[in-house]
Image (cartoon, rainbow, N blue to C red; front, side, top):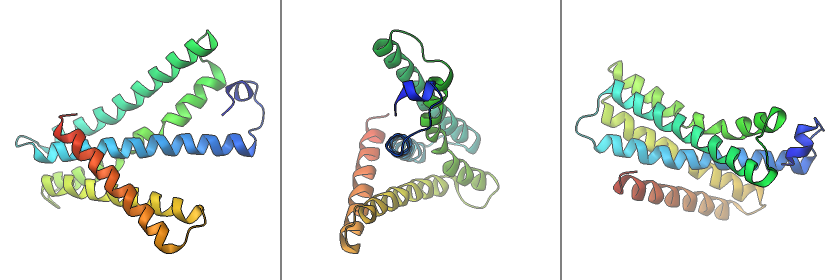
Length: 176
């Protein structure tokens, strides 16, 4: 998206709106993959409890969001020679906000565990499963939007889910 146009208050063109939506979705997908690795790592922990697990999930999501804001601001300083302010800063916050949404599903399932609805490990694995299913849905929808047939859309969804899960498992195994 054109930061100069955003700063000037100009109406976003369809291309700018699409670029903004793509940037937000990219952040959401990245955070989803990261959160899968966090909850799988927590599920493998022998010492996890609901409160500590919830705190870890919130910390991971907020930390990821803050790291993105710092990186965006630093990149802006390098490219433009000044800090992002006003509309530019609001745009950065808007694009990065989906990173925080990655914690909502796991927190709901962790809360259900704290209320005795299910075991904590079950809640964490269910959270990972829901997130992988979400990756499948986004991949499938992307295949549909590209005009592919149903079989290609399902294949795209399956590939996104497998790749997302593989990345999350590698991150969890590496201790990230």
